[in-house]
Length: 254
Image (tube, rainbow, N blue to C red; front, top):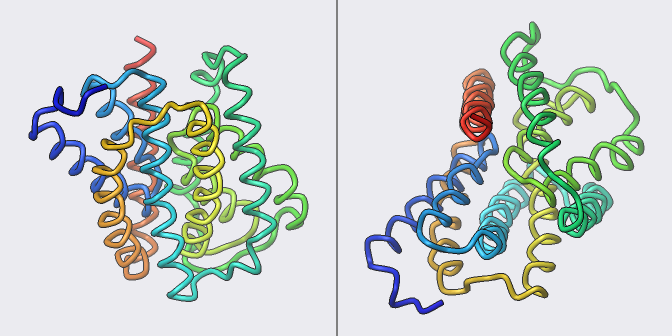
């Protein structure tokens, strides 16, 4: 596809969308709800849109992960096996999506989003502090993380919210720590999918580069905001993103 078919305003539009999506994704997940439709509306074929989206979103989640590491909110040595589990899950999901009907997911995911929204909205305890561990870490790493990673490989939007929800509800993490951890896990899932799309030659590299610039800026801003935001405000932001994703699914089904 020739880059000359894209007017300057479309390139600026995609840059801005990537910036806003990365900022939102760093805080609550769901950035793919903006970038994937934007790519398709710009005239990029669906498979190339998915591949290009994975490349640019990998940069955003990678930038956010680096920021969390620099601020010592996460430690790579503590997350290496969890990231590997997320990577493997996403690889399986990306390969599987080519052979299955993903329409079933369009009915399951809204239910999960409702559960997440209700949990964060009505949880009676402060989400800023750690709570009781619900399942052992090895079980969470061996089962929950790969399942979410597989979802990201097959479908995508909301993966960061799912990882954060798992950290809070099942691992007893505070919402800020769970969200910071989710960035590293989401980076692993994005990289796995990106590698497969690169191998398949489904990347529009010039558009990816334009959006990568926006993703880096958005992730940098989002990371600084995450470390300063009131946990209660982050709670409601996550709920808002879940509701937006629910609305998106409802519109796509109608």
